[in-house]
Length: 185
Image (cartoon, rainbow, N blue to C red; front, side, top):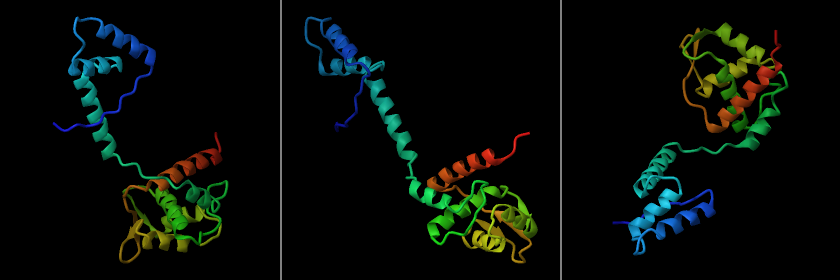
């Protein structure tokens, strides 16, 4: 049987010591290896060692399936310099990583699973930039594969895909910014 390491942590070491003393003093003979495993697991709040191990294994499976992608907070901070307090782009970033984050934000403003006419896309983009080049933004969305369009250019559709972790963080900040600037009735 191969040995696997299992992290062990208790909230109160005093309670652990009391539990160990009580369990060790119950019999005439010292506890066996398996009995010690069960004693320690119970002191940590589990039913027995098997429950402790099963919990650890389940936690390990769940955390490996949900890989945590790092968030580039510096990139977000630098990208936000291109967006004013009214949640509008004031200039198009020169750095590709910042442009991509801006495109994720514009992508999030488009309705999901809906075909939009070019005029509708233009209106949305005009409302979210103050440098008056909605055509640049529309082309960047298509070229960056955030939006698909028909061959004749009459219908645009947001491409459904999961944003990166950094993009999700920016989208959350932009949502907060937009709700703060939206007038309350």
